[in-house]
Image (cartoon, rainbow, N blue to C red; front, side, top):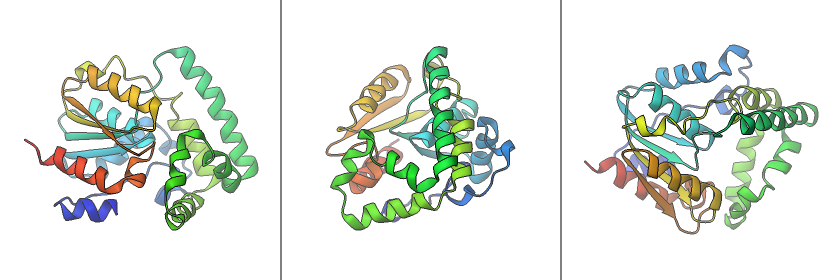
Length: 231
């Protein structure tokens, strides 16, 4: 739906899986699980300058990319994303929690992890999705490997990546921040980011939670199309 929707409004999306996910789920080279390597991967995937879209962890990576390569990103779209954790104490605590989760994934496997992950309050709004959509989403996640997910947590987790809160005022890229109205945490983060980024606008999608593109795909496409089509 998302890819077809973007194509219908004249976009030619190029997909880039994060390390440990999707097409890169079996690539376990430790050199690839770092911010620097991931930014290089994104750079090689695109024809720049162009528009860059990122969701959740991908949104954090996209924001780092825009901060690192300001002339390459024409417009930036961030869905349910944050600039990271503001303090060293928060980042250290998250690293400990992510390491514990990584070990559980390695010990018990992807399916056990997904029972925990999909049951988080963050994804409660996905229960409104039709059964076939939820099943396909679950099947996609099962294609990841336990080693890949654990490595991604250790190398690209929120606790590992540096905070960009202090950098936001210097990012001049036009930015669209998308959040679902049912996702109170990321609505608040979105408001704070929009206030700090020089050229940002916040779009809150009604009836959606953390995965706006999945829960309200048509509204997501309309918001993105309006943004990238504007002058």
